[in-house]
Amino acid sequence: MARRESQLQKVADTAREMGSPDVLSVCGDVSNIDDCKRFIDEAVNHFGRLDHLVNNAGINRICAFEDANDVTKLTPVMDVNFWGAIYPTYFAIPHLKKNRGKIVVNATTGALLHPPKLSIYTASKAALICFYETMRVELGPAISITIVTPGFIQTEMTQGKRLPVDGVVKRNRGLFRNGFIGALPHMSSKSCAIAIVEATCRGARYVTEPKWYRPLYVLKYICPELFEWSYRAFFFKSRVSDPSKQPKRD
Image (cartoon, rainbow, N blue to C red):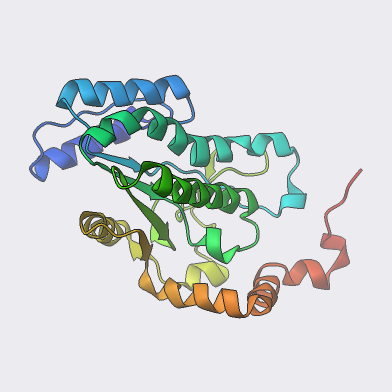
């Protein structure tokens, strides 16, 4: 399910080309609980069962928290990233239990590495991790859960799609191309998808791609001050050195 019908059709066509003749696409909004119930019901009615639920929806917001003009405009990030996974999970549970199904949830490395200017986004993803860790206990072993923490992947989000300070989703293709973030290697979405499918099939509890992020988790735990210094150096150097760039309040 997705909001853009044209993109859904492209995904459906690709699935058919890859050997899946029976494809169901449902246009809807994951932040709308009625749409989530509808797409679960339509999937079960069409296929007769539900074996997997993949929670992949997400939007980003890149801005220092104090620079937000109106914090109420940040709620769509939590609505899509958090509730957009919780709603379909709620309606899918009875069907997944019947078939010992699987839930795949897409979080982010940022939920564990805490980069600046992504506070609401990483908070929404950290909430996902906490929620589905709890679900392992409540739903296991009838339903298995794989939590994915991807780093920089070649997707619309790393191509500049985000929720800016005005609260309207936009795309700035140059957003990640320049500076420190643009210099980091980005994994292809295809390679990432293959890794997620393989990990889910073997019952992995966690998937981190690209794999070079894994040692960073340990380093962040051992020496958090190093990460804090690095983040300030890369992301806030101009603000610290130039007092005129400090955010102003009325």
